Image (cartoon, rainbow, N blue to C red; front, side):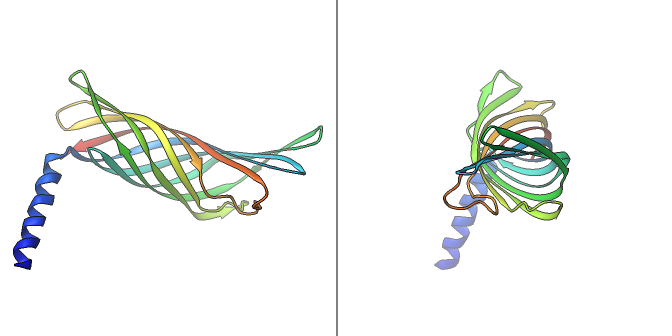
Length: 193
């Protein structure tokens, strides 16, 4: 009886998977990331730019991604203490491994495109950091994406996300006000199975 039940469940799951639009692809993305710490001493703002490559698996209402990104250019820090503002730039080389899960609800636009809101989470794991004390980052993401058909199986995927850092950075105390954010834009291509 248990074997029959297991076979029935497996058939239901596999038939449901084939009923979905299933695809895979890759995406090149750029991310502007910033963090602001406010306490009794003043305000500190950190910003950096990242470029990355992600591979994704899409099952119509959800996208799972795995990728890698690196900082590009200099990281910038601005300190505002009283009426004094100082800005420093430093070469910070950080390599992140990224794992993300985004939910989406696609709407057809004409015969060749779908547009969808995005909501989900992603995790940036610090793989290597030089000249930086960056820690792993957990993000909650909101955004919009689109799949534009180039053929019956190949599509182009532009995407834009706004993310908020939901864990505090290293060195930020519980009494400090903290806001970490990112703006992420990407372009990719996928293949429908």
